Image (cartoon, rainbow, N blue to C red):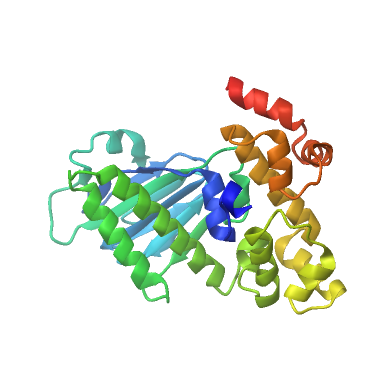
Length: 311
């Protein structure tokens, strides 16, 4: 399985399947009274304050004051506003950002005490985006003083430096930094007291996390409930109940869903024949694989691959 599809860790696996595409927006430096309103967008936006303070006002949520070193992540958010004060009248962010020069947008005169914010948008492959976006709340904030805060602040600072530097390989460095930032934000989110549901939160549970890692390490193995319960050092019934409570679906259903996510990706990229893919995802026959694929995806593997080729 590892040689064929190349997956082994739940977080790395999910991000690999998501095929992230990163767009780092221009950095924002602002002073005085200002407010920018951002339209809704799909998937994830990550940003942080290199210097200063500002308010983040997300529709349907109380305004949040962001301070220097704080990092935020927005998951499929509704419209939101970044502002100097909660009552400042916002203008559309699009035309303002379009006027960027050398990766920088300035509001107000240059000042040593101005706000300095860097943010980026990470878009995913729509076929598998729900693997992550369904687990994320609209807003995650990691404060500078949190256990992960210092590392995240350093990454934001590094990212902001890259945006403002016309150096060789800049877009590549920005893309990798944004993805590293995403992983650290997911770690921070999973470690917060109000932990997420789904596989992301379950990774912090010793028994359930061990079972998840085992499944991802060898998805072609014919796992059964007893074996996964043994890995978790739990009884079969206790494991099944705990897994569904944390992940949201029964263990073997999770296994099927994950196998089909891998299959969709492989069929989209047309890297394996259907019979090879059946073996790589743990099915003894192409027929058994096709039946499972059709149940989960709603189309046969062959029809799905043909549609992907046409697209």
